[in-house]
Length: 247
Image 1 (cartoon, rainbow, N blue to C red):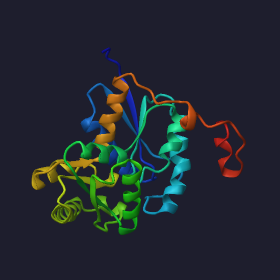
Image 2: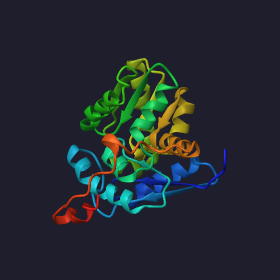
Image 3: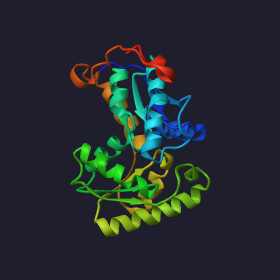
Image 4: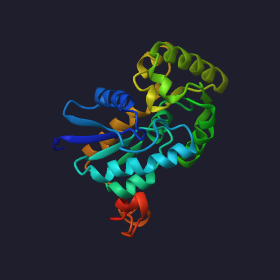
C-alpha cells in the first residue's frame, strides 16, 4: 500500500477555542506520525452544545468549515451528538466521521455491551437516539449523565476525572457492561487513566474517529456520492445563509 500524507481536520462544532485545542491534541496523540491533524473552530455558533437548539445552530458553522477546507482528506466531527453529520457528508464528498458513531461502534467490537457516560441529563435521550440510528441499541446497556456542563469539564480536570470515574463504576455495576464510552469531546484525554482504573476498555470518540478516518483514507476509500448523500443541488439561500447557496 502506497504511503501518502494524510490530512485530517478535526472540527469542534462549538466555538470554544480551548476545547478545540484539547480535541486536536488528543487526535494528534493517536494519529500516525506522518498524518497532519488540524483542529478547526467555526466562526459562528454556540459556545457549547447541550441542547437540540445548540445542535441546530452549530450546524451552519461546522458546514462552513467543511465547505471551505479543500485540503483535508477526511473530517472528524467532535461533538457527541454528531450534529449535522449527514449534511457534512453531503457537503464534503470525503470521509466524515462523527465521534458518537465511532465510539459506539468501536466499543461494540470490544465486548458484548457498553455504557455511555455523558454530560447533562438532558442529552441522555439524544445518545439513545444515536444508538438506535447506528444499530447499536442492543449493545448499549445504559446512558448515564454526570451532570457536569461541557465547558466545566476543562476547569478542574482532577475533579472531572473523579466524577466520571465514579459514574463509570456505577454504570458498569448497574448495566453489567464490558466497556465504557465517553459521551463528550471535552472528555478527550481521560480514557487511558480510566481504563487502568476500571479494568475495561474506555473509548473516547475523538481518538476512535481519528483512527477510523485515517484508516479509511489509507485504504483509498471514498464515500458514496450518489443517492441520498450526493452533493446537495445548487439553489438560492437568503439572509445570513446566502453564502451556502452554491450547493
